[in-house]
Image: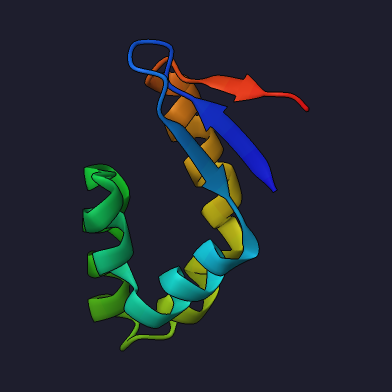
Length: 80
């Protein structure tokens, strides 16, 4: 479990194992909900090109994708 805090407004996002399952279940729509547009487009294109097989692989990279996105947006890691 990793926590990120938005320094501008104090919102906290937590990356848990549930995110893996949500991404596995909904595929590219998970990235649309999180507003990570690049990965939403890539995930959609890969799922069309591989007939859905990439949907089974993409969630394994989800934690690192989310961490990079939050850090790129200026969020800070919350250490307990």
